[in-house]
Length: 323
View 1: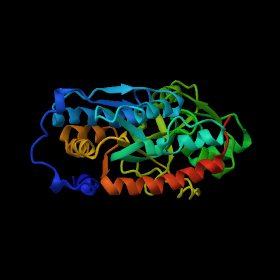
View 2: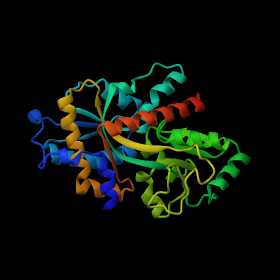
View 3: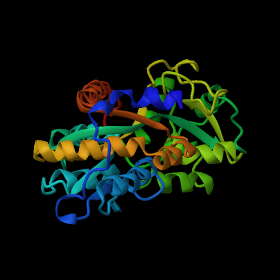
View 4: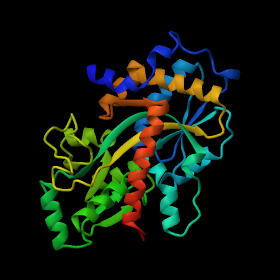
């Protein structure tokens, strides 16, 4: 409980109304877009928050999955949506770098981050590099040594090029000087299914989708990409502890709206998301999934995004073209 209170400290809770907001203007539903298939980190974060927002706003808040192009299709859909408060995006950290990746590959960016206005960060977890429990590698050092002996033979899945699952693995393989075979899928859910089914041999995932499989003995965690160890995985070292200090990546999920959304509507949505983040049922669902609430809103979230974008764009430029 004390941890939850600290995580919510970024919200100006004293300014929130004591009661739930009145029904959304016109009683219209509000769509929350997730730019990936079901089962990934954005979906794991989005569904409990959307359900809590329904209780706060008094209208339906359905989650609509719009996968494709590592999340760029769904991000672009919301960037171009009418700025009327009816379309939200539960975005992942990859939304900051996909346009830069397009430019590196000589493509026209499908959207720019500036077309999306940040409302609130909901979760923020390191990725966890996992392998099947029956894999021969018990430590990250063993995986690195084997990959150096067998360049390009050990495969890993992701949610697509420069997605929130591909970028931390690309950062790691570059830092370790190893060549692993990248097998992209349309989202974190299919990427995890490929690992569990034996199609690939490794995956860097947000904690939410993989925690139950780690604790259940199906997957083995070798390292995490955060600044400290994950509370539920106290024996799993960080990349920095394993000798890769520059491999730092948080897979955060946050709510965005089209940038032209009027300030009064943004404020109504901000209040709804803030109250949803305090909802007991949503909090339990996220904590049980291994992805507890890590709330930031307003200027705090915008400042966080600026810092994270600068670091991640630099990493993408170092990684360069991905074929």
